[in-house]
Length: 271
Image 1 (cartoon, rainbow, N blue to C red):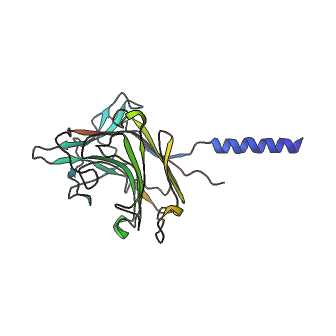
Image 2 (cartoon, rainbow, N blue to C red):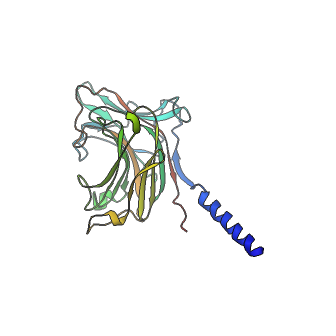
Image 3 (cartoon, rainbow, N blue to C red):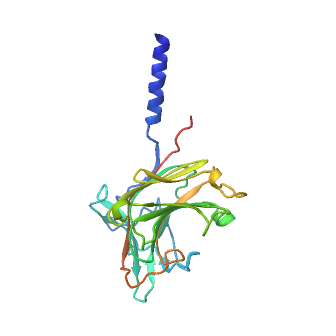
């Protein structure tokens, strides 16, 4: 009887451990006062223009015109981060690109964000990660994980992508997810999740897994650069570029990317 009870206790304990939620290690709920800047203890800004390697048209700023906390009844706590792409009087564009470099880095775990995306020709929102050694080894050797990208002329489809040495630019490891029934990501918030362990990266939208990458998926002779090295988070709203192409007469401005929250959880314990 005692042997049977030990087995039962072991099964219950194992089920409890499997069901335990991952531990949160960092988050931003964007619940500061309406009109305020993103929390400077959590986010820094990339600034300037010059195309950003993609022939983008925007100039990134740290002004409240391009990034601020807004009231939003559809957000979980009634507030969200708004990143706004604006057309200037001179015919150019400004926007914002936030990053956690110097504030927070991670080497794996679960990243979850609830985001409402814009739409329109030439609009290119993204939520992604870059290797912290970018300045030392350059791109793509540093590694890049695109949790989501959207091309504004395809508002119902998002892309999850892995870039590294030998699989980058026009030849990354990439998959897409399209909402059913003609819905678009501008219609409502959706939850985007990246589960990242040393040898496996999984992308999902609203609980639907749409992309999985492991070292076995790499082209022959290339390296997996996503194990035991720090990365930082970025979120931005680009205008134009090689992939989405430029805005046209149908594109309305301003365009707004809304982020309800970003939450990062510790990697799940091993067996």
